[in-house]
Length: 543
Image (cartoon, rainbow, N blue to C red; front, side, top):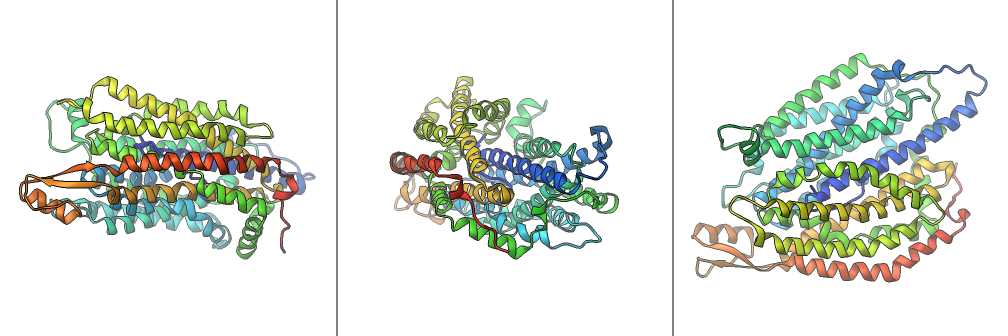
């Protein structure tokens, strides 16, 4: 379970109570769904223009069940790397790495927020004989499989903590950054193929496959893996005789899915042919330079520029609660697998909330909901800080009592309501102001900026925890705890580093103050953007 939120979505996509990584996943998935629906509209418009005089062939779901299953499976594969990358911060936290290291590793999640930068290349450069989408899908999935096999042999040494030298954060970050870069590229290819793999009668199932597949893949790579990797969980629920390790290790998990990626990609490359007969929407014919010029012309609009600045700064007030809370709970002894499992009961809520909230954001002023939910989410951040402070006092020899997990679950549920209220409102406004002539590109740009607005505050919040925290070495005279080496030396000499002043609480208060300041001054400016005329959001296309 995570308590953070960084938006991620198609071509601009994106992880903290363990909720942050899960939240990223949810926002990424929903924004992708919105863009797929936008592209479906473009497909239908293209059909009306080009094929109105041609005889229409109707396909039922049974006729394309194989394509639907393949698409679903590709999205499941897409969720595996996301889930695995989201589990690493919790594993690192259980090894007592610094928050500076956590901040450095958080750059792993940036590729999904930056993929708009290379998405036009994926759409425009390909081998026609092999297939437009397969030209990128097959090599990226092969590389993902090879990366998993490589990691299965090296990840244990990279994560090894011998007491003096901790996990190799730099190498881990570099490897998983490339890992997520490939996953983001695969996402671009699959999202594009989804719109042409299915007939126009069934293209609506693309967003369903995306939602279900990514969620299932993330669950397998994160929640299920963390549960099966945990010795405590396996010994308590799945074994008759306790053992020192879980049922699976990270190496085993990576090796298994590496083989799955290689085998299934080979089958897709050989067996599956791309259908080039279906007419394509006009947006797909844009060249690389035309797309980049179009993005630049959108950004130059005064209203869009103002909106982007507001999106990039709106989540500063939530960064401590979203990025640090889950890791702090793990630091206080809450089992990481229990936090992951607490996300499971939230799935029905995460499905229902957008449906309920969308009724209130469908009108002409969707950002009013964003503005009203903003202070409540800030106050929930204060409650998260209290939850972290309260956690040590309820810890027992056998773990934590049931009522503690109920409180955590309820806190997460309330957090979800405020988060989804803001998120659905912003997505509704994106759809409302996007120029219909270039809807797909416009939405993708706004979603990318929204994503980045969640990523950079989270990284910064993680980075500042250690400088704001004071520790002293007790039990080893003359030693300090200012760095990882000093902590290791203190421990080696029989001492223990004890936190005397936790920077997380300072961050929580500062973030809430910044958040209310933003809400009071800039929040009203964001609401006023709803009063702009539609022409203020439209741009002329350069040819």
